[in-house]
Image 1 (cartoon, rainbow, N blue to C red):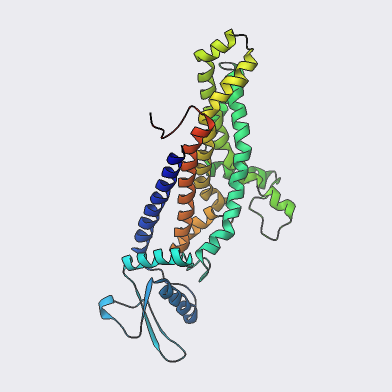
Image 2: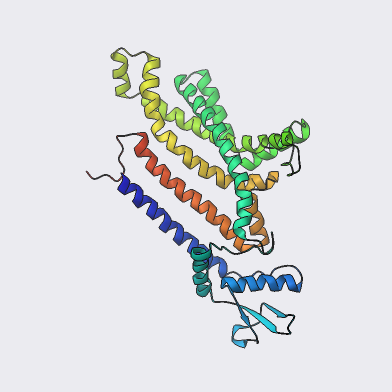
Length: 345
């Protein structure tokens, strides 16, 4: 088992390295984004790019490299001509900067000359808090509805839950949050229609969590309910559960000791997969509700073509997806001892 775990973790890091390398090269093939601000601010930015190995600083024009990105005369009357380095040289400098200095570049537009890692670090806890709360809220409620629907199979309770699941699972998250903002925020005025500012009272900030958490949870609740019902119905119709009943166990004992336990084997790992889906889906929701998280940052960086921030944001989502996938695979073996993934026959 441990051999398989180490193999999966190593494969995840190799995959992550390949994805990030290809993403970096493709982004650097895009036109170079020139910074905003006065000449001094731009000069500071380009000198930082020189230190990163992405831009060349020349004292004279180089016709073979085309037009210079920026020309500047410093206080000592020295001329500076900045040119983009070849992509593969930038890639080598990027690898060196990460492994030696943990330097992922600086922002161009969102926060000029501020480290992209620092910008992500400010916003990541906000996004994680919303997503974790939505998982905590949706998992028990979704599983509970699924269990009730399975125990009341083909009865009015089952039909009501199944119909509600089909309706709500088909509604996109951005439609749900728009509806909640309109009804709860503007019509009823119960909750803030936009995410409160950092200077807002604590009570207002707490109320600001309700709309996005509910919006993120609707799809998850429906998914868990449908999955739990299907698994539990299949387990309850199995032969070993019938054998347990014939040996004298009551229906409640058979369900709690055997049916639920075996039905949870595929359900519990799916929580990790659902968390990945929520993280990717929260991009649009954060942008609509004005939440200063990494989802909203991703949209802003893409629209403003702030490639360094966009790249680090993509790296965060890639890392979460790959590591969660590893935990998802490994968890099967720990949940059910009969499963030994990667074991030899």
